[in-house]
Length: 103
Image 1 (cartoon, rainbow, N blue to C red):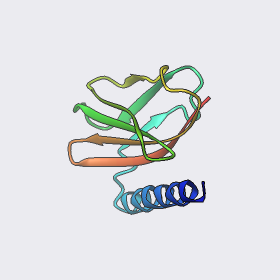
Image 2: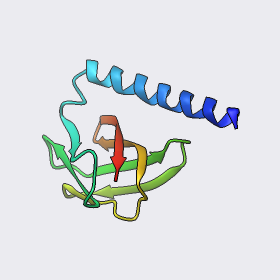
Image 3: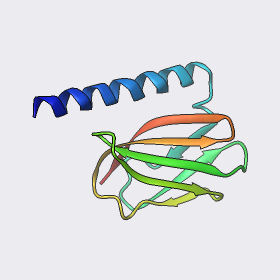
């Protein structure tokens, strides 16, 4: 059980460090999403370009729960159960990683 907590802490630390590094490069400002927390089963990706976006969502243990590529702004996440997740959005050479809360 303690082993799972260690993995969870390491997972959050790694993604947090990646998000801070990207914010320093201002990449996080060109790519984002809303609303957060999500209660209606849909998120909307904001971007300054209209390229296809690869979206990866991981649970707190690092297991991939969703991987998709979208060309629109809207992403249906109604199949994901309530909880805390990490979302990684990639568009071209820009990537952002954030915490996602699903209610």
